[in-house]
Image (tube, rainbow, N blue to C red; front, side, top):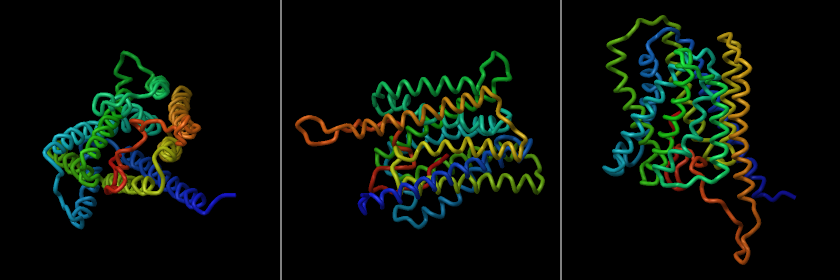
Length: 332
């Protein structure tokens, strides 16, 4: 018979899953609106995507005690590093969304970020990945090759850009973990990235600005709104349940993107891409199942305590800071 605490945890997990599905749908809509904006400079799209997030988080910071105070000079270096690499990742992702021919392909390649985070955590956090994590990283990258379909021609450039956007996101992912360890507020990290990206994109936006139709204005504004909504949804998700229990549901973005791409853009992923989706999502599901199995191992002899595996480099998302710290909107 399930206890009251058990029912409460189950309900919280259910709410967390609903929020993370909402985040996945929001980011899928962001990809759709970026594509619907049509033939506009990538920097023009990047500017609008970050401008709205900057405005929202700016207002939220005004109501915090610390306002815009950065924890330390050491954190400032990591904030710049996270912002710069994350900004490059957004550019690569938006280019892939426009040019790859399928927003679901762009989504799945960007979703390689947790696997890249495992690799980057070795160098940035001195964390040693476990054998099963390495195996699933290799499997995920193998699946990515079905989506990228690498050739030595320019035709592969959009897919390669999508793959590299996942690498940049994984690096930024790890930088935010470093910042969390050093005590920086998550909301400040989001604001720094969004403001940095907006300011860097501004000169390109002005220099290469192309007039937009009312529908293009609507599309770019909605891309920014969708991205910001996704940030808040995923933040709420990790308040209700730990990442190791619900993070895998974030891959539903690929399904949402495929459905939206089919109905609004007449996009149908080819067979090789679908195989890649199955392999990558399978790797993510497999990693989570193995992690949960290890967490339920019998107690270690003589201790009376359950044997727990050490924290995985990719189990705690950047938007899920340590308990007791602010949990602010992540950057997708």
